[in-house]
Amino acid sequence: MALVGELSQSLVHKGSGNKVSSIGAKWPPGFDANNRRLKGIYLSPIETQGQLGSLFTQVSKIERSNGQSTRTTFRAFLPESLAESIRQDSGSTYPVEAVIKAGNAVPGHSLVYFGKNKPSRVPSQDLRAAEQESLNTIVQNVRPVGESRAIARATEGGYSLEVFDPALGNGDIKSMLELYAEAYQVYTFPITQQTISSMVSNGNVVFVARGADGKIASSLIAEHCEFGLESGTQVSMFELSDYATFKHARGNGLITALQVFAISTLRGLFGNNAIIYSEDRAPWLAVNKSSAQAGMECAGTLLYHCNLLSDRSIQYASTLESLNVWYAPPVGK
Image (cartoon, rainbow, N blue to C red; front, side):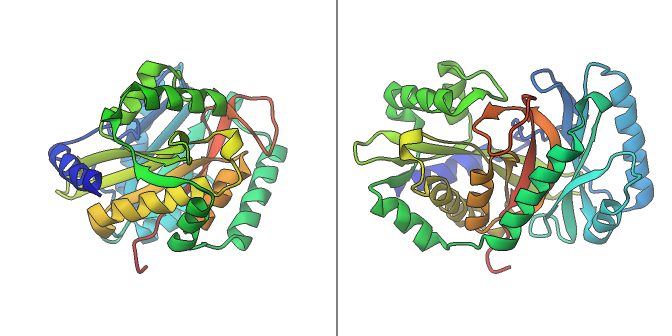
């Protein structure tokens, strides 16, 4: 596919220097007013408990100067043994919410999500129990379907998968605007033609499924972020996000097909070194099932992480939603 070759050259070229996206690869953490949270990635691997304590102290100072924030969420690379030790510490200043095994990108390390919410932003115990029970059921019972089977199901249903070319024109942008407007009542950013145009042309990689009529039926975005750690290691991350399928096209396995297609394409370009992950809406079971079918592994849950409102399998009143973190293991691991 010619576009994949062009994509490779484009991403490699843009990878020089630090490329920052909404993934949040910046330090100190920045305040996100739409989601009322502080968010960032620490760019120096943490090697000891003492270094982690110093990091917590630094984050606490940033919190005190951002009183309007109701959530603090940040990530850091920790040795795998330290990550697991901290994960079991229920009294940690900043509890561990998720752990991605990231030794393929930073040898011997995991990418750890730390998170803390103010009391006004804590999910009820009943809600957490319902979401955790549903997630456990998916993790225990849903198995990967395999790339060929996932893609065959989509193609047999009359759909084709492709890497989206933002140069194709406004007709597709209008279709994607309609898609996201149908899928989400509240989203992490305003859904307008301008934001959709920016989303598909600012260095992210867009994967779409088209129906037999050539119109976009389903879409996902691989947000790309590349940055250098202070240790000298270059890290390339892709967050598979912004999942949406028109209601008339649901039930055809399109998100699973797009996920395996995206993972295969990105692994083909970046090998096993890239960290490929997703943050799936905890109350919408279908997308979590798709991630499990696509061969991704669950890493944990981010509590009331952002403002989202769409179809929900588990109902509650808040527009804040928790997200389940899933990641794609390196090929052969």
